[in-house]
Amino acid sequence: MKGSSRRLTLGAGAVLSGFMLSALPYLMADDALAIPAWSRKYDTNCQMCHTAVFPRLNVYGERFLANGYQNPDDVPDGDTQGKSAMGDLLNLDTNPGHWLTARLNLTPFAYETNAQTVEGKLADKFTIGNSNWLQLFVAGSITKNTSIYIENEFSADGFHQAWFYMGLHNLGNSPWANLQIGRLSPVIFAPYPDRLPQLPAISKGVMRLKSSDGKGEASLDLRSPRFGLQYYGHSGPVTLYAGLTPGADKPTNAANNPGYWAGLRLWLPEGKSKTLGGSSIGIHYDAGTDTKSAATDSLRENAYYRIMPGVNLRYRDKLDVQAVYVIAHEDNRTLAAVDRELDYGGIRAVGTWFLNDRWSLGAHYDNSSVSDEVDKALLPEYHFLFIPVVTYSWRENFRISLYPGLDLRDVDSDAKNHTVFFNIRTSI
Image 1 (cartoon, rainbow, N blue to C red):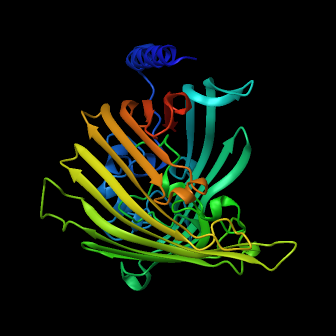
Image 2 (cartoon, rainbow, N blue to C red):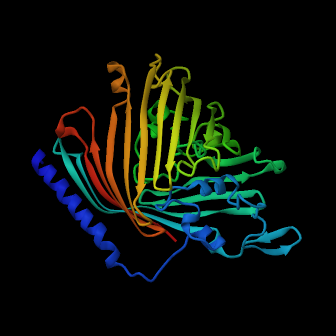
Image 3 (cartoon, one colour):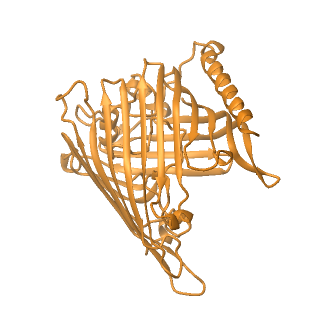
């Protein structure tokens, strides 16, 4: 497809998407409301813990999470809220709606330029009806200050468990003593966790680059789930966290590949600013060793580290901006017999302007690159801008988004991978 035809097709797709986005509220019945688990349990709306456009947490939601999915402003209620006493030592929540939620992610259509090879040449790609995944999300309190969090995900490629862990909270009645154990997120308490993100349909980017290019026995990126143990503490304007992982998807296979991380987040003191309340800055450090068993020589290793300063700016519940800068080093990215060092970095930034409780405009920027021309073969540049991402919240638990994306790489126009897609996310 030539450049002019491609632009015409992208434009037509954008117009069609905008029409569908505007018309959808009128095409759907307006008499049903499905409320996710914690809304049912606490008899409140989604915006108690989320921004006007889910899944992004608001400040209260972040405090609720850190407190073990319990009311952060009162005595922890994990043993009593919504539960019935079955004896002196047993309280159970017998209402599955209090701890079970189904979440659906659909991409009705997507158009990408130069996204496939046909007869030896790059060609555009048009996809219709992609049901990305269905998640059965189970979470809540086992008892006071003891919680679980589990995501079971079904997709066209099969089934897997993404995040599942147990939380032990307020040990010794101290907010500085909390533990998470299981397959967990190392950056969930950072200013930009890339977990419950503002624009959830964007998956690529610098925070998702794996050590050893994903070819080692313990290849990890910055944000994806991993087996391990994480400590965190929080009080007032300070949050601290640190964790340890065996370093692979299956912990029994990674006894010699440990990794660790640590972070600090500083919040604007509560009550100091009504304008910027909930804003924060922080820094995250992540390091480990990746390995690969070679048939002809000794075990190959790649020691790596990543430093990620970040910021979150919230303005009057109308603007939410998150950004990080990643600095990374790997001793032997190729896991070759002769070490091949790599230094790289990048920016990941996202912002949302909430026009009202239903409409929002967003933007997402992502760049990853290396400074040395010789090393570009080890890490091809990723440089993308999604703008404007238009989201309509038909219900608090039903978001409809249009994502137009521009490939900003310095390459020939016939190789750029521009995209526009329509995404629906909902939960019940």
